Length: 371
Image (cartoon, rainbow, N blue to C red; front, top):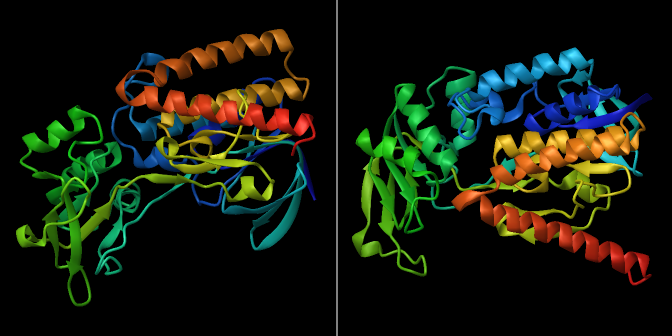
């Protein structure tokens, strides 16, 4: 049995930021992650971050990941890699498997920073070798330095699809098409315009009907869609390719939150089903959710939510006074407000307020004996 003050499940941006924030106040924390390397998605993100200086604008994601790991080491948090959390039993007991051995971790506080999983599409031929998620393609080129294919079709024009397309080109691939069902580009124009300047065709209002090939992808059939997203097969055309990537959104990984009997809601703007939480990210008396599990946003937002959960955990553990903690929380919330401003962030800001509202309403019903 392992005892700790704080257990953080997930060693990505939110989890590492939580460990640093809590560790600064003397909280003894353990971070567990099922992957062989910590850092989550940051080490795939070789592009420079946008935003303000306080959110590492101009710094590449992999460099930010390295900086976080150095800070985690400084505060003395223990990081257990190749370790899977398989269940939450009660509000402070977690089952893990590490080195082929199962262990029980008893923690005074738990932060779930389990992130999100990539969505996929189903169409004829979508299971052929050469069809993969954009995240898988990023892992190939940015982590393992392996080119997954020479001629690539990207499905989806969110920032992930646009950025991954450009990174594939930098790695030596030819992006022969970017396909988007919606009538408009979903990500930032600056990313889309870099592709356009490089001569990459972006087919808006189109979908992939099928991928074809005997033992691997050799090409795809693409067709335009109407306002109800129904394809016009009479206007379909074929593009030869050896790789098709999906960049069609993320879904919060809420399985452990559900095991902790957290109430959930569905908010499409934040990725789908996610646990209800209060304005300090609590989903239960001793459990927090931070980062993409609490709503899919950007890596910078995930880090701020990790800091918020870490600070509140330190307060609950008596390591940080209420007054000093509230000052820290106010600063974090100010930074979160900046990140959730503008064309893309405002919708997420409204959605986050809706989660907190639903949580407060549920708590009220419970206190009144209605639940």
